[in-house]
Image (cartoon, rainbow over all chains, first blue to last red; front, side):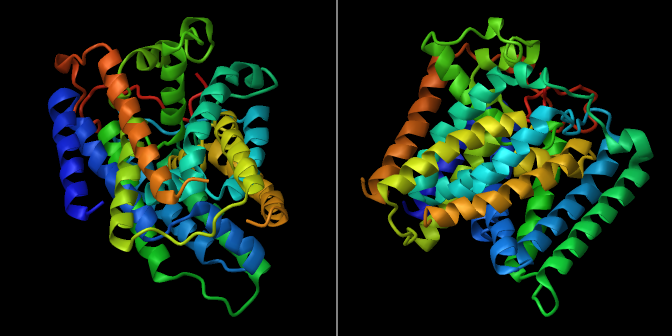
Length: 358
Length: 55
């Protein structure tokens, strides 16, 4: 599609949202489009960055991610302290989180994308990620349906670092932990490595600004997988396969309301659509990629991994965006538990990926 | 396997079809209940869905 036609379509969707849903949703669409352009334009891949560190001892991706987390924290934690309307991304430390994060980290290496990675690669037209998206949504929905059973295995109340330590203390601890993570990476890769490239720097800066805008406008941090689950949930209800009132998660007042109204009123849905559109804009400039065609076995394994990715993301209370970026930048302990478990999963995942010759 | 171009067309048709069906099948949006453009400083507690929520 030509860029002019695409711009006209996105502008028409913006006007439709502004007139028929809300101006906030229209503006959030623009934020999402910016996110998609930054993710796809900088190739800011969380999954790839981790894999390059593990397999090639290349620390540029994780340095870029640490920069993003630091910048987002420097903005989000003070804002949460000033504006009581804003929410942090607080997930409960739980057995569900530990297991879900490990499995998510494993599956994202096979599927070659986390939540945001699947979105922007689908927008770019990568065949496997386009195929994965509906299965990711189904997995995310089923994970939320079963969430109460997983939580019954053991949980404690969410811990907010700003509540425990104050804004300054939470910020200092967050920056110190990020520095410690980079020191660990330094110990792993050894001396003489290039630590960061230009695309990772501008990607981190743009994404941190857009994540902050998301927080200011929507009142909640950037998220991805809730919207996926909502889409599959709506289809399941329409087909008569699911009764939200009988479910612990979807029977809650807020979730019950969201599954009964148009998805265009949901914040994560709008930014997800924007990310797809922004990535499509980048693809319109650079043309289709020349990815190697996958074998039947690679397709099947990749699609199964996509379903598992969705299911485990709900158990883990988010993906690299909802749990890692938003959790850590808003001072949630669950974000810090998520990272080492997901990374451990990725250590296994890169070997599975190599076994299937992706 | 279908060509990437066909898959891309099917993908976008599926997404647009889903959004169109959702809009047609859902109750009309009450524009008088529109949320504030900027949540920060609005004085209104926001309650959107997020993946970190346990319920």
